[in-house]
Length: 565
Image 1 (cartoon, rainbow, N blue to C red):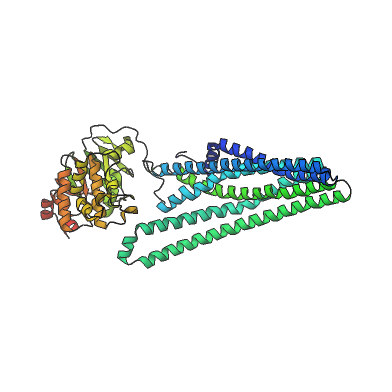
Image 2 (cartoon, rainbow, N blue to C red):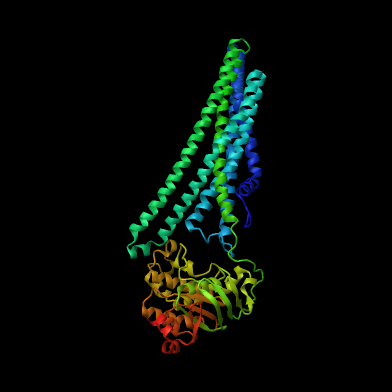
């Protein structure tokens, strides 16, 4: 599955098609099991008529042996069928999880722009699991149909009225069960929406826990999550009430249906139309029907929840890309010249900007929105509303986004560290150049971080790098960007959480490490701007001034206010 126009029905159909063979195998084995279950009361009736009523010990032993063989077949058919069904459900859920993750990680973006990370995780886990479970439900439903069919045939052979009751009454029960599942489907979808929202808020709060503590905002954060959680709880309770009503009503209808079969069977026995053994078989078959009919109630509930979850997955998979086009490969030899022509996006209003190849360029801003919009354009997270961005004279819209980001690396100040060791976060998996890694660590000041940790670079940083301070995280992130060694590197505020001495060291290290390669530093830090070859001031979404840091600090009042105030 991929992006495009998808509906919940498409997601369900694709999940079932993908596991068609396993569902068919599970349904076949389940049908064999149901056939055996239906034969049990029939054989018991035969035992009553031929062995018990006739007091024939030999026949009793024979039929008991037949029952024993039947139960062995029941055991194996159930085990094999359940294993096929569970595997189909789990593999379908796994494929859906992969599809959601692939869509979220698509270089063209768009799937996660308006959703919290926790909400996307909920879609990829709980919703995928519910859709996968539809395969097991379908297998069980087919088996239940087989059980009811066998029971109806057996009852027809025993008594035509009893068989007709089953054949005519079962479709009515199924139709009523489908109607009763509709409220559950609506409330299940609302429940998953609220649960995903609560998960997203929780993940958001945990990720910003350090900042919240620093601001003393823990109480407000807890209250925010409590409100979200209460809304989720209310939706879950409504869904649970809908499910309990649906299950209860279906069971009541089923009980009445079975009671009708038993009552008609009893009247026929009193009239002499049925023998004692046939009556036992009829009552046993009626009780057996309780299982398949309860299965149908469960299947309806699973399908209702599966449809709701499939609709949520379809929303993610069919989300439009944030950027379109772009199939050309990036040239092997990238000079690294960047040019923006009349770019309008966010805080940028017709920006014209040239970044020469092989130089260290600083960009200061009077409005943080300009920095965010510029980074989005250069990283191709979003395309300009008008104007163009070019790399070596080629518009970025013509280049493949994934390959472009390997050539133009935008290192945002809020990028995440991954759980694992510090070295795992800095060194690419296929890298072997220890000297290059050491140089990158030293240039970013991350070598001091390594020396302060108990196990050096092998020390785990925790989820999101929470075991590190803000300044340590910044230095590790900068080391990672430097170690990647892209032709064009764009860094945003890489030193806001470090002291002045460390910042000055990092500024010199950055200049030396990136010598001869295009580097853009988007920052208002005087220490970083001082080591650049050229500084551009963005004011009002346009270029307000250009020159060296020393020149602008001496002659331009707006620059002094933005950088030195």
